[in-house]
Image (cartoon, one colour):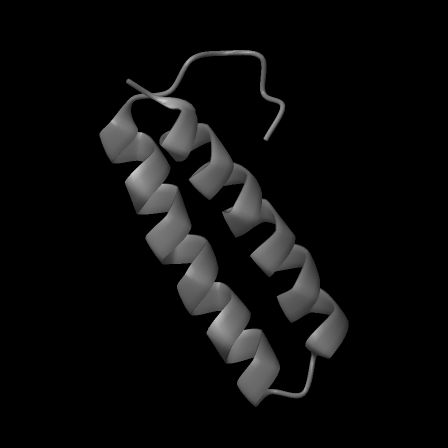
Length: 53
């Protein structure tokens, strides 16, 4: 996640939910590379969320 702007905790949680749902759909459709990319983005958001106070 390198947008360069600060996002709220709620925005990050929403992004995690949306991207996780998209990754699940991609996996069901057999698009494993897309699912893996989405999961990497989710991991980045989770890392940022974990670094929040």
